Amino acid sequence: GAGVSQSPSNKVTEKGKDVELRCDPISGHTALYWYRQRLGQGLEFLIYFQGNSAPDKSGLPSDRFSAERTGESVSTLTIQRTQQEDSAVYLCASRPPGLGTDTQYFGPGTRLTVL
Amino acid sequence: AQSVTQLDSHVSVSEGTPVLLRCNYSSSYSPSLFWYVQHPNKGLQLLLKYTSAATLVKGINGFEAEFKKSETSFHLTKPSAHMSDAAEYFCVVIEGGFQKLVFGTGTRLLVSP
Image 1: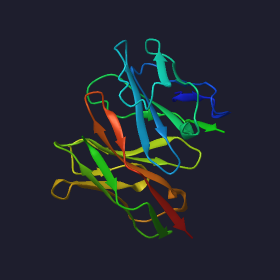
Image 2: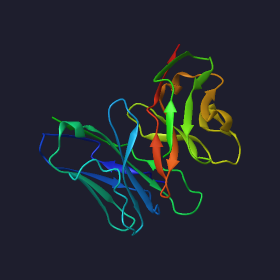
Image 3: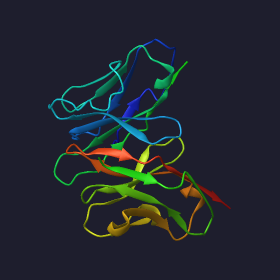
Image 4: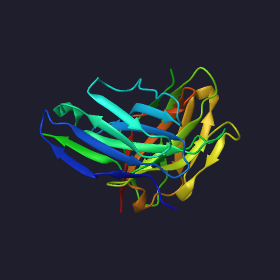
């Protein structure tokens, strides 16, 4: 079956511009996560969505970052007024519902470069 | 808070020799631990996971890991490295009710012929 998909795969933008990254989770997966991976580092948690509940935004680094998800479908991560330190790979993951389902399935990521 | 420490940023082995990637965790209770692999220009793939059912966990591609509570370790091993094993490996622990993944800084495995 189809995995998690993300678009675009690469995005180059100028400092100060806004960007929007998209994630399509695996169908039926109720939980969705966004992570950021800076060069040579592990992943940092950004935000978590679970069904129609309020998202956990505790990992968002600043108010320039926001994300939305409608129901259990597509999610978009928006970065406003991009800065060079925002350059990273942004990864999305989804997880199926139910107890004991702790495996997250990752998309290929969007590589963001801010010039 | 949960955390994991990967003790080596790079590990180099020859093809056919054993692999050992080290990970120590910090947790106030019995954690759920994972190893993920990231090949160049590819997404993260789950290698194996520990969720307290058995201390020795077998994963894909011949990898396994042993949970040692006394040492707070979850080292990843493979008896014989293959060229295709060259990748970045992440030790990961789950934190919180919503199962946020907390990643280690990664270990890059280099395999030489």
